[in-house]
Length: 249
Ligand code: NAP
Image (tube, rainbow, N blue to C red; front, side, top):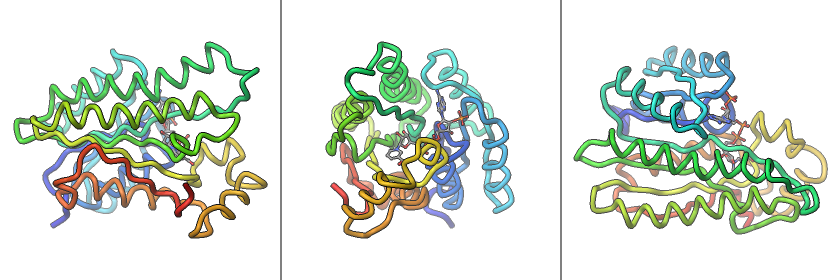
């Protein structure tokens, strides 16, 4: 029996990239998974099909998790599909790099609305669905919250906020047996990272040079850490931020 048998998990932004790998890994350990997506219906359907083909349970639920009404619907659909909630993985996020002169209100709000406000609102809603037995929240932060690279002030700030929110909510919710942790990926080869040009050229080469393990990450590297935090293997771990970056720090 899998480590997460009988559990129900919501993974935001799971139609591709890190979120898709997390959804598949949680399902492989026995969790029933809600595969949330914003626009890629076909991506989400592919993830659900892969989980189902492997003998797992999953449904795709559309919802922009920077919007309260969509968040409310995401959790009510979860309850409808699987009857309960045990694990929330706040993975949906956007990354836009820009030098100071190019920072606009739009650049700021777009990233903060999803990466920070969305994460807070999903957690707030999840609280209504966790049972008295507790719950588990795993936030996908980033190496940049401490690395703070040039030309990424706003994105890095969103992830700094995620780390602080993780620590604060862990203290607030511990008495209700709700654990709150974060995983901080380094550079991972995903659709989004490829689109931004991060997985080739200088950006890639500098990362590989700086990382003791000499490679960029794959989505499965992050999913394995999330499974650890979602399972009772980490029963006494909360408020932690786990750096998974090949040693780059
Ligand atoms: P990605 O390949 O760009 O995929 C993003 C996912 O988020 C997609 O499933 C997308 O859904 C979904 N999404 C975007 N906006 C959304 C919204 N408003 N509501 C719901 N879902 C939304 O991203 P990724 O590289 O896997 O990154 C995932 C997370 O890891 C992010 O939080 C990112 O900051 C973090 N991270 C990534 C890296 C990296 O190197 N890749 C490193 C550190 C941290 P649709 O396709 O349906 O729009």
